[in-house]
Length: 393
Length: 125
Image (cartoon, rainbow over all chains, first blue to last red; front, top):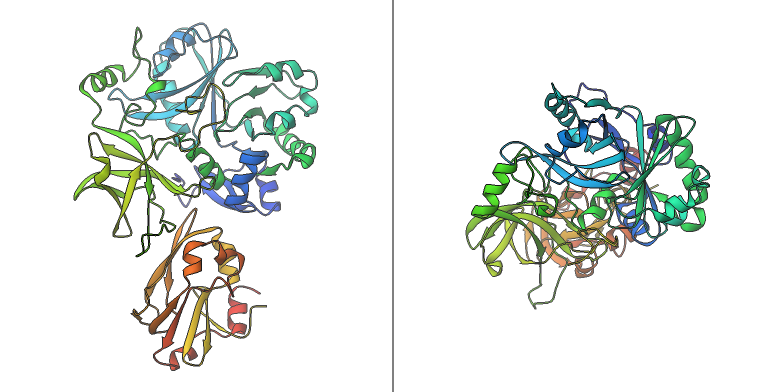
C-alpha cells in the first residue's frame, strides 16, 4: 500500500477515526488519511466477511460529482469503458488513461440521474483525478464539477449477510423493494434530512454487499446502527489489511499494484473494462495499437510452492510486490501483489510477466532465493457476485 | 508479567537455557504485535550461528521480520511442527511455538540478555 503523506502533512481523519481508535484498531497512515489497518486480526476479519458480514470505513475514497447536459459525452471521452448510454441508476467500472495508455486510476462511474453523475476514485489518486477532470472539462459546455470528497463518507457492508443487515436500517424501511431490486452494479438515491444517501450494490471483496455514501454527519450514527443491528449476524469492523486480502482472492485490481501509469489496463487484465469499438477516449489509440500488435506482458496468477527434502509440501513464503519473476535465468517480470490466501491457504501472487514465457520455467525471487512457482488462473477465488467479471472462469 | 524462567532480547525473542541447550522462540508480546504468522524460515540443524546473527524470518500476512539468534552455538533441533503450522507461534509462543534449539557456545552470552524484569519494563508491562 502506498502512502503519499509527507511527514509534515497532518493526516486527515474521517467521521469514524475516533471510533476506530476507541475500539482497538491499529491505525496507519494511508493516502493522507489515518485509517484502521486491523481490529481483531487480519485472518479473523477476512473470515468474518467471507462467512458473515463486515463493515468498512472507506471514507478516504474520492467522490467527484459531475452534472449538466454535457457530462455524458465528455465523461465517455475520458473512460476506457463505455459510460454514454448508461441507464440511470447504473454503475460502471472503468479506468481513465493517459494518452499513452498508462492508467491514471481505476474508478466507478455512477449515473444517478439523467444529467447527474458521480466519479468514485481511489484516495491515493484523488488529487490527480480531481485535477485531471477539471483540466479536461475546461471550455466544455454543460459540465459542472463538484468535488464532494470532503463531505461524503463511505461505509461498505460486505458478506453473505450484507443484504439482511442493510435491510434492517431504519432509513431504508420504506425502500425494501428498491433494495431487493438492486442488481450488482446499480444504485439508488435516498433523500435524507441531512443530505442524500446513495445506496450502491458494489464492493471490493467478492462477496455480496453494499457501499453507502452518506453525508459526514450521518456516518457515525449509521456505523453504530449497523453494528447494533447486526449483532446476531456476527457483524464486525474490518481494517484495510483484510480489505486487501479480500480483494486479492477474487483478483480485483489495486492501483499502485496491478494498475500503474507505467502499463495499460489491457496488460493489467482488465480488458473487459476497455471498449474500443465505435468510440474515442483518451488513450484509445495506444490501446488499439497494443491490441493489434499483441500485449508485451500480461498479468498472471502464480502459486509459490515449497517442499521439504522428502518432497512433502510445506508452507511457502509470500511473493510480495516487486519480487522479481524469472523464466529460466532471464528476468521477465515482477509480482504486483502477493499474500497467503486466507481462504485457500496457499501462497498466491499476481505478477506482470512478459508474454510467451514457458510456465514450467517460471520462478520468483524472495529474499535473494529463487522459489519455484506454478501458474494458476485468477480469480483465485470466484467472486460470489452474479454479473461480476471475476465471478467465475 | 512475562515468564520468569527465561531470558529475553530487545527484538522480542526468548531464550530458555537448560544445561548446554538453549531453546529460542518469540515472546507473547511479539506474537500479538506481529499478527497472524503464515510462514517461517529457520536455520538448518547443524548450522553454527553467532549471537545477534540473522538466522531466519517470520512472515505475517502484512510483513516479514528477521529472526536474530539471541545466543551463539550449533543448531541442534528445529521445530518442524511450526514450519508446517506457523499459526502455532500465535497460539502458543512460549511452549509449542518454540522455533529452534542451539548448543550454547559461550555461556557468558546469556548474561548479556534481558532478564524477565528488564523485558517486562521494555514492553511497558
